[in-house]
Image 1 (tube, rainbow, N blue to C red):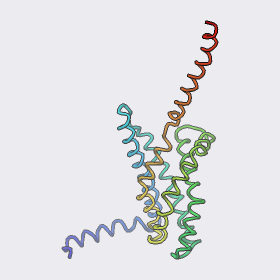
Image 2 (image 1 turned 180 degrees about the horizontal axis):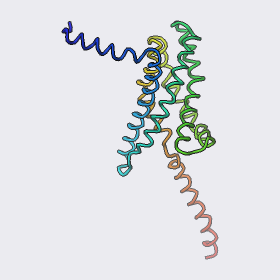
Image 3 (image 1 turned 30 degrees about the vertical axis):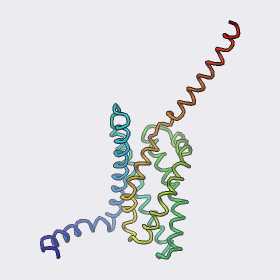
Image 4 (image 1 turned 45 degrees about the vertical axis):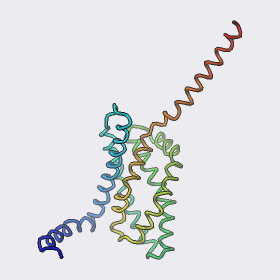
Length: 215
């Protein structure tokens, strides 16, 4: 049994957090939690990068952009889940399965597009450049998405109250947010360097052949 002071403390906490999941405050909670978790994922990814490259400086502007991107996705998810719950009513396994499938086929690619294009625009790139990056990284992103989200969304749609859906997604996806930061900011030129170096060697060899033949 909890002492009286402990019970009063729990009641006060409940009184404090309950309004955050009601009415217009629910949208604010979903928005800020999305931004906060995506920013935290970027902080973790940058910590990994600075450990691998000791001279690298942490980019707080990049983390700020991730926060803005996460906040912008919060309302999208908020209203998306409201629509899903109105269109697919109930917790039967068939209904939950339909929700998961529709979420994977519609919401996941849309959120991915929103993320990559939005981040590129905030970085000063054009819309076409953002679309090109999304196209280049889409299948890598989408295959990883299928490995993570169907199981997570089964839990979400079957066990949780609708008002906790977005918060659940935002909190459990810290690893996913870290992956998104890695995928967005990965320097793909590093993968192309060995190819370009070997091509340069081949060109040099071809150029040296006539000289060797003359000698």
